[in-house]
Amino acid sequence: MIWLNLGHGVAGFASIATFLGFAGNLWWKFELLDHPRPQYCLGLLVGLLVGLGLGQAWSLLWLLPLLVNLLLLAPLFRVKSFGVRPRGDRGDSSSLRLLHSNLDRHNPTPDRAIQYLREQQVDLLLLQEITPAWLTRLESELPNYQLLKAEAFDNTLGSAVLVAKQNSQVKIEQIQTIHLPANSDRPLLEIIIQTGNRTVAILCFHVIRPRSTQTSNYQITEFNAAADWSQRQLQQGREVVIIGDFNSTFWSQRLRQLERDSQLINSQRGFGFQPTWSAHFPPLMKIAIDHCFYSRGLRVGQRSIGPDIGSDHHPLLVELRTM
Image (cartoon, one colour):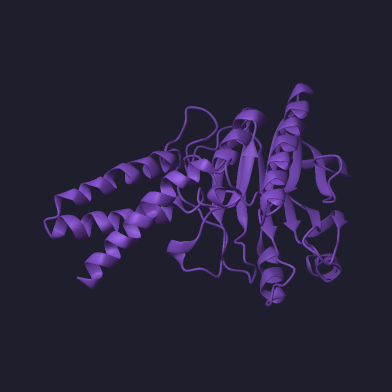
């Protein structure tokens, strides 16, 4: 009886949270309920199976919220006719290999993170939460990469971009610090590159974490500013990539709105559930808040999540290909 009550209790909470997650515009804490939808599926499935196993037909009520969550998660496992190149199909296009990692300013094992970065063979390293101590190590301990630009702070606002010294098809045309919106105190790095016959604008993006009504509303402002930036780049005939820590999930209303407004595609489509936070959580409790968005003139060759490197975020590796 205890397990039965527990199963239905979890399913009941998941059902309520499923629908309150759509009311984020009413209260910022409801918006947070939009993120653990894979976990809601697990809780509802447990309640459904336990109830049916004991002959409680009313447990079929858990099917409705379960289907709602599954519909939101379904695009993760469905390859669209555009935006995702079937794995293994390399074609004649040039590749752009990116690694994003929020290194975590409080990382207790920086040696592990440096060793991981040293072993990677990518075109660009796009790193966040870069402190002065991190910057010193990046400059001295990654011999295969050249530091292009960095903004180092003792808080979470720092970032850095490094380019491979050899075997890279990337030509750097411009790199600068920008602010989105213009009055933001967070410096973001914008990189304009040439790869193959395409010019690509890349934004190393880091969004505020919603902790109050004010910060939650400001996250919307940041998403809107990023969408405007994307549209400006597209109007100039460039391909666009926005990659970083979005502090939001694939299926959230805000991120889906950003995908529409920016005219970009979330690279997680077709690659399944690839959680990046928190690296310290058990596997079934993690969610995906690190993302890569890209324009329709590009395709995803590969997408994967890196190991635990001491940060609370897993690294994100994406290979994009020009058409």
